[in-house]
Length: 286
Image (cartoon, rainbow, N blue to C red):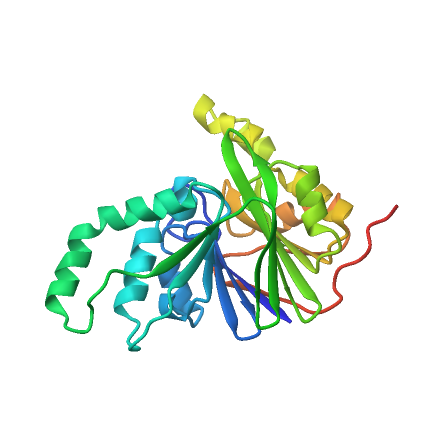
């Protein structure tokens, strides 16, 4: 099976109860972090893992709320890995990822220099391997395969979604997107779809145009449910809520999704965990 943990379910607006967008995916003995929002490492610790335990970092896109803690993650992994030959962290993301990683290391250049000067066993900067992709297979190790496909978050471009497969279980992580055929194809028959969502009916009431603008490049709860229905997935997992559900409102959000998708629907606070078993996806009607 594949274990999905919603590490951070929040939005760009700081929330005392929710960290920034990030999802942990455990498949076999491999651990993947999808996006890297603020507070991710505290949530990783609560989920029983750490930066040094990651197999790879997967980035759906380069919006600030999805990469806010990238520098902290890379430095923490570097200084908490004590083996004599640390394995470079694989970072998989859309074109532009290598430039962001390079700029992050430059921003932390003083810190890296201080630590190398102070610790005899740190003699080189953090080691990473950056891979930029927009389509196709990007990972095939230890029984785990990962494919990516383009999504539609314009004017943010390019953006990608990930499909993780292991032992006949599969999970698709959409990132921020409006409905699009490429995401439908990536999610076809998957065991679960992790999808970011907004409440369009609430956001459209905001008095600031800048807030209302997010409606044109995010999926509503109903649109995410439509995508799950078209793709024939087994479980729809909602995350990255805008605005965040208040305690007691979860059933309201679930009902909106259930009006379009009649299978298992999951949503919750940070650290909500979902197990995805082999064969949970269904063939879409028609």
